[in-house]
Image (cartoon, rainbow, N blue to C red; front, side):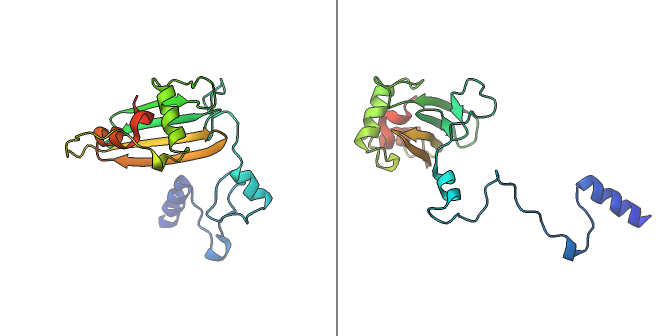
Length: 170
């Protein structure tokens, strides 16, 4: 009876009771990332470093890809306690700058001043209160043809504005 119960639990849990010599895990599927980095210059390395323009699941219009918007950036701002999140698109390659960002031209100008390096953004000095209400911002997509992924947490929204200016003002 104990063996039957153990087998039933193993089957329900999706595990198999095999001797350890036979229980080698299968290799990961080709479309799943692994911890091993491909050799530089290899076909796998080129594939990994090349932006993909395949539509993201649930986006039949093709505005988003698995790596962000099909063109431009997808910016997010979220409360640390995950009670809210906002997101906008920004395309600095378009003339004039476009997307759903309410201050697209100013945000693109700030990015251009920083050379596209989000760590180099400069905002306007403010007198921010020292209250810890963290906000996390993220950027995915491409900026002038360069694949971009960036995330940072700030002490509060005032500090975010002070350090990033118009880029995350939405």
